[in-house]
Length: 153
Length: 124
Image (cartoon, rainbow over the protein chains, first blue to last red):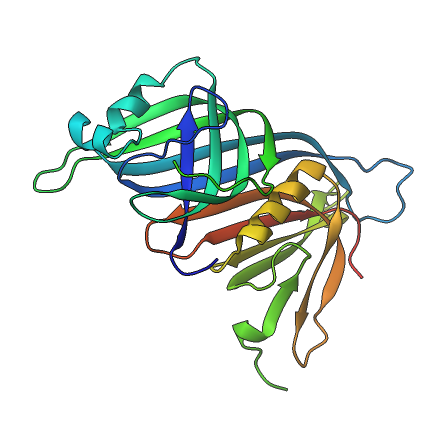
């Protein structure tokens, strides 16, 4: 990763999202495979064998809660925008390698997919910035990235 | 004979080039084979099967490595995983499934990635 490049989550209710989350602090992609022991009496030796029987993933992250006007000025999803996404609405997301500050540019996509926002929480502690956490539950396949055309967002 | 430093004990897989921390676990699963004919209170354990797993953390994952990890996760197929220790004979290798991964993208930090493999079959 070159100097000045960074990785952000882009999230929207339409395909090929171009909207980052405002004032984002953390983000994590977590994949989990359900494995089942597949050894049988035909398997020689005492070493157990396994096979994958299911895949799932989720995305979690956090950011600062800004006033709606401030968030809108950045053209990003504010904490309130994220809260509005909570529910059974299918969301489109992608994790992208980006560069630039005022005019963010997508360098490449690392992963993409669909998800539903299942959790949103805010923490307001005395004399600290108000922060929020969100969690997305993966919906369908987790698609590894491929080179995409560079575009300003 | 000398102690092995952590930096000289490395796991290997085709997904990430380098690691920061790792843990390898080999376990013998036991069953209590005590019968009514056995005297005393102690159990009599027998190893009936073996399993192993590898966990590795990297603090400098590159985008190409992240894509390779997701591709391997989707494939749900066993890949070659092993470990070596410089100047020792404790190295082993085998086939394993990528059964858990976490990619952490935090502000002003390197991309951290944790992989967990479940061995399938024996070690050599």
